[in-house]
Structure formats: C-alpha cells, structure tokens
Image (cartoon, rainbow, N blue to C red):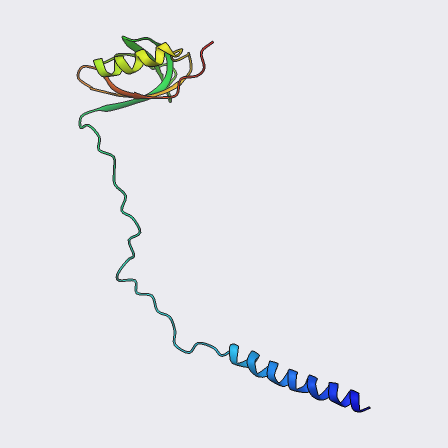
Length: 131
C-alpha cells in the first residue's frame, strides 16, 4: 500500500508539471504581424536578352538545308514555304552542323533574318540524328 501511494504521488507531481508547461506553450501571440504592401521585396530583376534591332523571326520545319540556304515550311501554315540565304556567320555555323549530319526533313528551326535582304543572321534548332 505504501508503494502504491508513492507511485500515485510521483504521477500527480508529473502530471501537474506537465500541465503547467503545456499551458505556457499555448499562450497566443497578442500582437498581430503586419506586412507592409507599400514596399515590395525584389528578389531578382529580370534582364531581357539584347536583340539586334530590325530582325524578323520565322519558325518552322526544315524542308532542305545546306551551307548556302535553308528552305523552311511555316509552323502554323503548311502552305507557306520560304527559302532564306545564309549570311557568312550563319553559313559557318551551318557548315559545322552539316559536317555532323545536318538538318533532316521535319526538324524544327527558328530563324532570325533581315527583312530587307531576307538573309538569315542567326538560327536555332536541334538537328536530328543523321540517317
């Protein structure tokens, strides 16, 4: 009986101290946290890529491509087919691609060209594996 009273007394002390600490941890925060909307937080500014002024873009599928010119079918209009001559810089880049196998029929390509001369200044697209 003496042993049972000791266990009960210890458990009462334990429950009493546990109840106090639990109640202290649950005190609500009385001051509201206010975030100001007047000053936005700038994480990182978006820097646009510099583009050469006066260039037009043409996106489509390659029908034929060599080191001198590229023939492209428009992406949205299958009846629109245009042939563009390549500038010297674009011809050098095309020569490297042709050495590896070149563009195949149906590869996607994006061209940036001068609207007056229709010469391709830059092009971008992933050539498929050669046959």
